[in-house]
Picture (cartoon, rainbow, N blue to C red):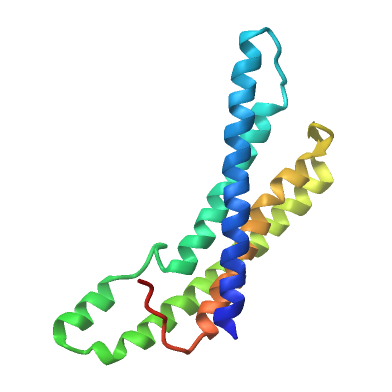
Length: 162
């Protein structure tokens, strides 16, 4: 069940990531082209900057899903060297649990920052309040948190991709 939820999250993130990157490229190319003919939109650059920020969170979510995020390899390598590979599952689950704890804290901190920005922020561009833009942070960490919880609670053997 958790593999299916994780897979759905991965497909959603991949779709949003492709749309986001394509939109960034399109907006940037159009902006450059319009500058050649003397037209400039002041909102394009800040929007693309925030889209890059969102792309970083989406990429981090995919890295969490594939296990390509920052990992604690020292213990796993030392266990492998001594021939104690049967503890690998426990090490993986412990690392996953610690990652979930860190993501809970980061999501909470991001949400607290969002609330402060909501109270003291201002309209940034295109009528968007700065809190909406800062909302990328807790949303990104929450997405990684849900994905991390799915990995932690998944006790089925991983499927080998070819």
